[in-house]
Amino acid sequence: MHLDLTDDEARALSDCINARLGVLSTEIRRTDRKTYREDVRAERDTLRRVAEALAAEMAARRPLGTAG
Image (tube, rainbow, N blue to C red; front, side, top):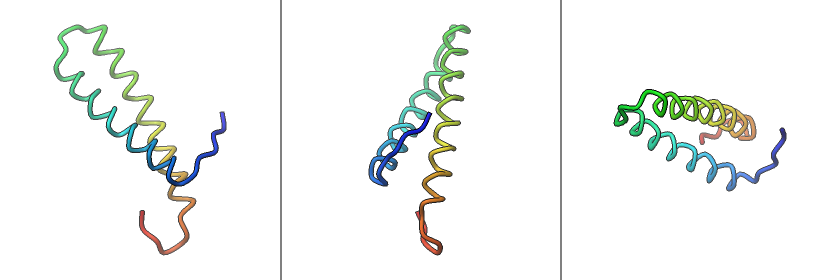
């Protein structure tokens, strides 16, 4: 899949993903139900991969010598 985003859209998406990752980590710690915890971990792992890919793409877009 290919998705074209502006820099602002990419930052907004990254912020949303990172916020969701925080919520998922809390859910994993708080739940006693094994199957639910496994489902939440799977979602967290998927979002981590997406966040990593998005961060790499955003870094590649930055002009040399700039920080993000």
